[in-house]
Length: 218
Ligand SMILES: N[C@@H](CCC(=O)N[C@@H](CS)C(=O)NCC(=O)O)C(=O)O
Image (cartoon, rainbow, N blue to C red; front, side, top):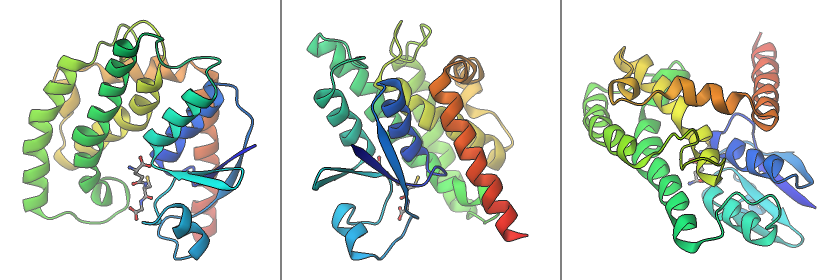
């Protein structure tokens, strides 16, 4: 049995959870907060980042590595095309979204979602990068209707973890929908993903934990 470790408040955790659900793999969840200094957590994820998984006596961190492992170890209900080049095109999109959208926009999250403040210099730098990277993503993505083409793939697990959070962070901080301005109909894509039972479950369990965290604060 696979154990998924982390928190439903993490978009990377939810990316892996979505893949587990889409592939119909049995798993359990172990709640681990970010920034843990627990030796057992650091042994599995040396920066204390989530998610990581436990498989037997082994552990794996980094969401893309985890979903690639799941795909290789459990080829049923495939989320990558059989053709190696087509599979690499799917992974190209996943890597692109993480490096050039999520990691860039992440610098805005403190202000966009957590009531913090981001410096004007950071905002200007992030905006410049997003104004370059979003149209580039628009060139690479297919949205036909899934991000890599006609089938739901691993790239959509990355899309689920990336597209709305990046669009909403930019909108919140800059007051403009930079993703739509780059010609990406991200709301239609999010709606398409939202029709899937797997996505509905991931979102519902995230909301459940958000509500519990809010209740605990009052
Ligand atoms: N590249 C990592 C990113 C994971 C990541 O940044 N997770 C966040 C939560 S969404 C985290 O653990 N942040 C705490 C930290 O960076 O110390 C992956 O794909 O798993």
